[in-house]
Amino acid sequence: MAVAQTASTTVPNDLEAHWMPFTANRAFKSRPRLVARAKDMHYYTPEGRPILDGAAALWCTNAGHNREPIVAAIQKQAAEMDFAPSFQFSHPRAFEVASRIAALAPGDLDHVFFCNSGSEACDTALKIALAYHNVRGEGTRTRLIGRERGYHGVGFGGISVGGIVNNRKFFGSLLTGVDHLPHTYNREQQAFTKGEPEWGAHLADDLERIVALHDASTIAAVIVEPMAGSTGVLPAPKGYLQRLRAICDKYGILLILDEVITGFGRLGHAFAAERYGIVPDLITFAKGVTSGAVPMGGVIVRKGIHDAFMKGPEHMVELFHGYTYSAHPLACVAALAALDLYRDENLFARAKKLEPLWADAVMSLKGLPRVLDIRTVGLTAGIDLASRPDAYGKRGYEAMERGFHDEGIMFRVVGDTLALTPPLIVSEAQIGEIFEKVTRIIKAVN
Image (tube, rainbow, N blue to C red):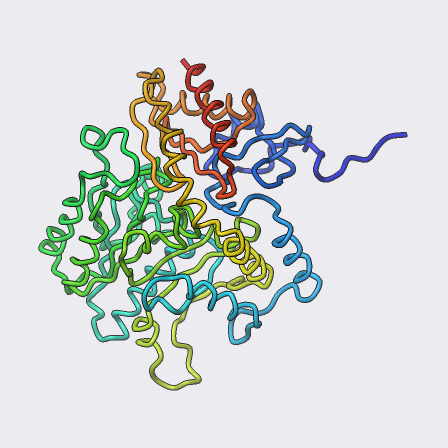
């Protein structure tokens, strides 16, 4: 008698129909890297082989995989109410989770606008910034400033202010009126740095040049990541964000911190803004807010910005923006359960405590063949491998393949940079295991 396969062990017999995002589709489909189940620090292949998650999936499963409180909350909510309209109606959990998130944010960032992803969060923040200046009678402030090597999602706003070449070059002229700060990485000055580099705060001063070129009266907002993750882990230099905040204040420019990756404990605090002692005007978030269990994103906004919209007739819409699935009931309860786990298990403080041990473990790779640089801040690490002269990115790709198929570990690759960002529940022993595996991988990829 044939035994029926369960959902967790079924292997698809046709991989063609799915056009995978940010993936070398042909290479993947010739040798798939499929996972079918997950728990705590591990994925499991359809055959049951464990894969140590060294990347929190996509920087998002901060509380680990399939945590019982999150699973139970989603199941209970699905049985009670599947969906509530987000325009002109809502549900209690949306207000509860907004209050919880606002309470974690610094200063007077006390209102939350929900969406469903980091990309939507960044586009939402940019639109709020533009609309804010408009409702205040400064409609000439339309220019947006991003940064080279920045990643702010894949909406047209996000790729316009973003600074990753391949994310931009195929899609036309994008938004007009956008300029970019220089990126903050200089290998000669910063190589093998633990935490924030000493060199580089002065790069924020380039905003003065941009203001002089365009005039402050035309500039709406600056958006940067506290730690540029998708480009290969570039921590902010010491004093850089503080200087950027001061220049924005000087000229009445809004400062948006994109904390889609750094939010919810990745750098040892609820938000990286707290680590750097600044109060931005808007914070974007996603990923860790639900520990990746259900898509959710949002923007936390300072009180003065929110209140500027609360004018005119009370029955009129104040901001003409939103998404069908904003504050989806399943996402809200997943977020509440994740926030409870972060609090009850003290995971943000745990990440801060583990940071020195993590940094030492990462730096143990210094001196391995082809390792050009290592950067680490919070529970993140970027490891630059030398590129092959005729095949940029091939060594990184082979490292990822070898990691999955031979060593049972998952991490991110950006060209020939390995990015490691484990769930915050990682143990000291698992940190050792991660870098034992990575050491073998680096030695093996010639």
